[in-house]
Length: 62
Image 1 (cartoon, rainbow, N blue to C red):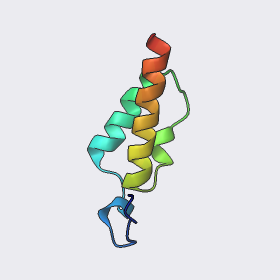
Image 2: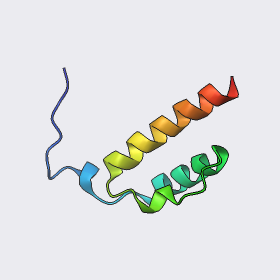
Image 3: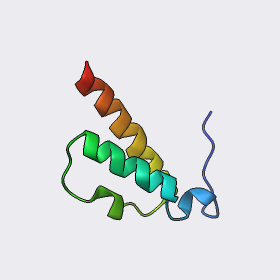
Image 4: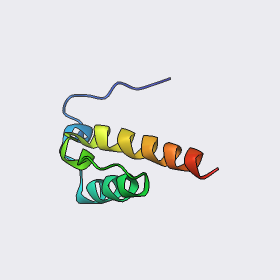
């Protein structure tokens, strides 16, 4: 069962510095040249990008 995320949740705050660094490191590892970390608006988006990048990196390394 999934829970709804309330609009007052901390997921809607700006991304943390650690999330921005993680996105930057993963983007460099994946050789992306556009500044993706500047387009992220919320912590939820940042988390989803990080998870997606980690999965893509894992697939590329196989």
